Image (cartoon, rainbow, N blue to C red):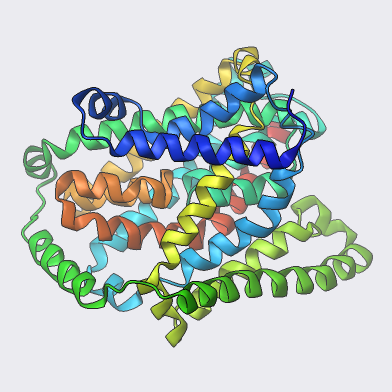
Amino acid sequence: MIQNDAVVLGILMLTLGLIFYTASLPQKGWTKFYGVVPPLLLCYFIPGIYNSIGLVDGAESQLYPVISRYLLPACLVLFTLGMDWKSLAKLGPQAVIMMLAGTAGVMIGGPVALWLVGQLSPDTVQGEGPDAVWRGLATIAGSWIGGGANQTALKEVFQPSDRLFSQVVAVDVLVAELWMAVLIYGAGYAARIDARLEADSSRIADVQNRLESIELANQRIPAMRNLLYLGAVGFGATGLAHFLADLITPFLSENYPELARYSLTSSFFWIIALVTFMGLSFSLTPIRKLEYVGASRMGSVFLYILVATIGMQMDLRAVADNPGLFAIGLVWMLVHAAFVIGVAKLLKIPFFFAAVGSQANVGGSASAPVVAAAFHPSLATVGVLLSILGYALGSYAGYLTALMMQWVSEGL
């Protein structure tokens, strides 16, 4: 077993580099492989294999605590500061409506799935303390309303046990990747689906041309000072959030101890809430221009390092201990899908907006652009814009979903 964290970090970075290198190779074998197995899936499961076979010890390593407290908040700032409110408004109400419908579908689906499975198999949804199933499901709520960064935020807030977290991460990744495959497959039949939805998709070509011109006009090669600016903004906001959380948390714990029930005395809750607010505030200032020199790309690097360290917490042998959790995940995703398609049908919104709005929630910035690009490569920017909105909503909406699941769980 490797216990030196510098060595472990080197192994994780080499693993990420190898995954993305092979994913970029043009050979038919690799393209077929990654057409079936998305790179994000490997970023979770290969480090999970390292932990499961005893090569590394994810529970003892200090990489995850460090990365979750430093890179995660900085990642959220770098993602949210790029929110282009004008471009989002120009997409029209349909894009935002479907994004919010996806969020609502996840928020409704979690408690409904927990209740339904609890009626059929009470043992599946039970547990006490850190092993309470709703605590693990809270991390899925964060992941499916934003992405991996929000998932980690809610893990730190609700503190599920490592064993439970291993199980729910497997549910999260496998069910989410299955749904993404369905959406990509559906992109090939978009015209037929739009006919069933009675939706007019003619505006999507206008959106495509507008976003192409915006991207070409603002593309820049970052200078060294630009990268330093990104570090200053990301880690400066992270430091300020830690400072304020250190003031807020003791005050609430001492004066309002009853708020502990809602995790409002968690220091990490306030760190995430504050950095998300700061990032959105920056998007209304000239700081937003840092997006053109790679803010979201640097945020993505931080995110994939975070994903690898999350994967390193997984014990794949524990996944088989509670297969009923997959039933919760599947029911949850079905409720989400039904809600999204139902809203699209009711309001006659094209399948493109439904698919990208859904994936911006469930997959975040790692996969929403992939689904958007399945319709047309230049539409990937729509996925980016909506996934940024997902990051902004994820921690807050995921937190509320977790509280609803806690309430359902206590009533079973």
